[in-house]
Amino acid sequence: MNNHQPGTPLGNILVVDDTAENLRLLSTMLTQRGYTPRCVINGKMALRACNSNPPDLILLDIMMPEMNGYEVCQHLKLEPKTREIPVIFISAKDETFDKVNAFAVGAVDYISKPFQFEEVLARIESHLSLRNLQKQLKEQNMLLQEEITSRLAVEKTLQEKNQILQQEISTRRAVEKALQEQNLVLQQEISNRQRAESALLKSNQELARSNAELEQFAYVASHDLQAPLATIASYAQLLEKRYKDQLDTQGSKFIGNIVQGCTRMQTLIDDLLEYSRVGRSRKPLELTDCNHAVEQALANLQGAIRETKAVVTYSELPAVMGDISQLTQLFQNLVSNAIKYRQDAPPVVHITACRQEENWLISVSDNGIGIAPQHQKRIFQIFQRLHTQREYSGTGIGLAICQKIVELHGGCIWVESEPEQGSTFHFTLL
Image (cartoon, rainbow, N blue to C red; front, top):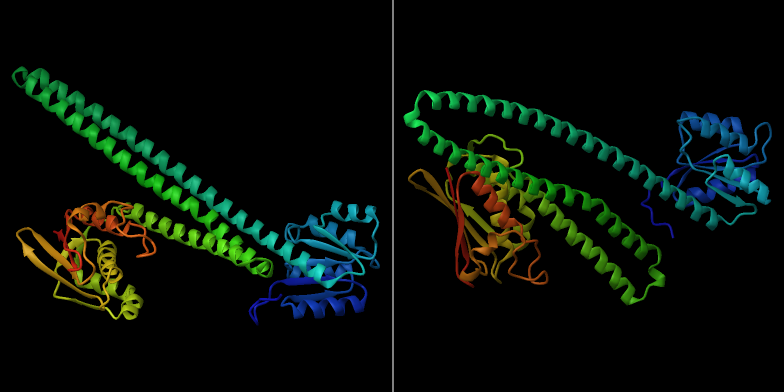
C-alpha cells in the first residue's frame, strides 16, 4: 500500500538498462508508487548522472554494451561521492557465480529477470530505509563525538582552575602561618577559626560537587534515553502500519500501549531534563518586570486557556532581581497546574503581589480541586504525585522546578489549600 503524501517523492531512483521496454516499465511503476525515477541506457551515462546529481538508489542491469553493470558498480564504489549509494542489480543472468560477483563489486541486492514489481518495490523500500538508518546513526555518532570532545575540554579547564585554586590556598596558608608566628596570643583563636572555615569550605565544596554530579547524571541519562525511546515508538508504529491486517484487536492494543508508554516516558525525560537545566546556566540576575514574565507564560498557555475557558487575571506586579526565562517558567507551571487540577466549573486564576519588608510576596490563587494539608509539603518533591495518570496526566516534576527556581532567586514557596476549596501558592522574591 502506498501511503506517501502527494507531491512528496519517496526517493530519487536511477534506472540503468539498455532495454527501452524495461526502462519504460520500471519508470512508470516507480512513478506510480511515489518515487522519482531517472532512466539512462548505458554505463557511461549512469556514471555522469551519479556525479552530477547522486540518486538515493540505483537499479542496474548487468548485460550492457561497452561497459557492463559490474564495471559501472566498481567505478561507483571507487568514488567517495557515490560509494555509499545502494546498488541493486536486475538481470536475466541467474547463475550463482553472477550473484556472487555482483555482491563482490559492492551491490546490496540482486533481482533476477523476469522480475515481479512488488518484489522490486519491497527491496527498494528495505534498502532505502536501511540507508536512512545508517545516515542517522552516523549523524548521532558525530554528535556524540563532539559532545565527548567538549566534555574533555571542560574537564581540562576545571583541572587547570583547580590547580590555580590549590596554589592560592597554599599561598594563603603560608601567610596565615606567618601571622600566627607573629602573634602568639591570637594563635589559638585563628587556628580554631581556620579549622571551622576549612570544614565549612570542604562541606560546601562536597555539596556543590554532589549537586553538580547529580544534575549532570540526570541530564546525560535522560538525554541518552531519548533516542532508544523514539526508536521503540517508531518501530511499534511501523509494525502497526505494515501488519495492521494481520493483527487482532489485542495485538493493536498492545502496540498502542507501547507507543503510549514511550510517549509518557519521553514526557518524563523532557521534564527531568528541564529540572536539571534550572540553575545550570547561572546567569546573573537582572531587574525583571514580573508583568512581562506573566504575559509570556500566558501566551505559552493560550491553547489550554481556550480549551478550558479559563479566566486568568493579575494585578500590577513588581520588578524584581531575576532571570526572565526562569520566572516565566515559574508562572507558567503554577498557572498550568491551576488549569489542569480544575473542578467542573471553568478555571479562575488570579495573581497578586504585596510588599513585605525586603521581599515581595507573590500569590497565585485558583478555584481548583485543592490539596489536603497532609500532602502540601511533599508536592514540591520531585516525582511526587497525588493522582493517577488516568485522573490527571503529569510527571510530578513541575512544582519541584518551581521550588528550585524560587530558591535560586533567594526566596521560598509554599501552598495554602483545602480540598474542593481551591489553592493559593505563595512565593517570595527580592
